[in-house]
Length: 257
Ligand SMILES: [Zn+2]
Ligand SMILES: [Zn+2]
Ligand SMILES: [Zn+2]
Image (tube, rainbow, N blue to C red; front, top):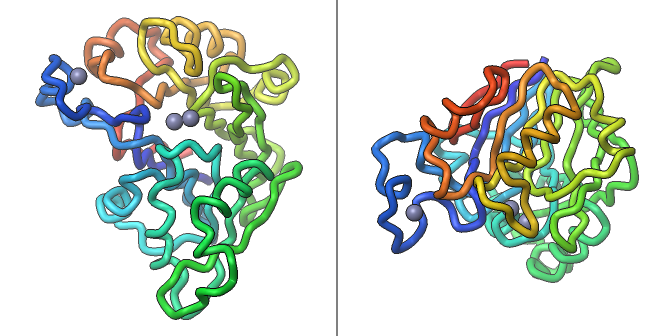
């Protein structure tokens, strides 16, 4: 059992975008209001988040997240890490908070948030990260997380596959332009695919709707959810043009899997 809550489904600038009065940025549909991409995953006995963007605090308040057992990062772009300092509340009573990321992402986090990692600020109420370098699959509670290295422009970033008792339940690839064949092989048989679909037009570091659809056709999951959306996709109109088992995620959406 696994519940995914979409904390944020927006691209790096969020939707609405500052200073923009386009039809999507001024839409009344709450699904067209997108904070920066992140998910919360709850399983019996263990819960974690993937990424802490700039709205992390607001996302936690909205979804009433009061406890975290771990934090997992996809990569160190600012739209995925800038809420890091708000992790302090999840380190009650001097508790260390396990942080899982690739070697490169951890190095970047240690540089940007050196005050948290340098061991000199172990004061009550400060964030206490316990870094874990991901070098293969690992378990959080009874869920196995398999890192899925994908190309995101020039950067290689991690998506994640969540499996329980050998069953591939869901995969989260929030930022990707292309996926190599061996990674695609690992995804085969996954029930739910969550994938980057920035907009209709092509982009150098993100999949377009057409590219994400093609990728979904290759993976053949039972259902696909698009995320990391920009202000060029109006939720209702864009979703109505998709096949029935392909949907567009929105902030606050919960998938009970
Ligand atoms: Zn991003
Ligand atoms: Zn706009
Ligand atoms: Zn990125």
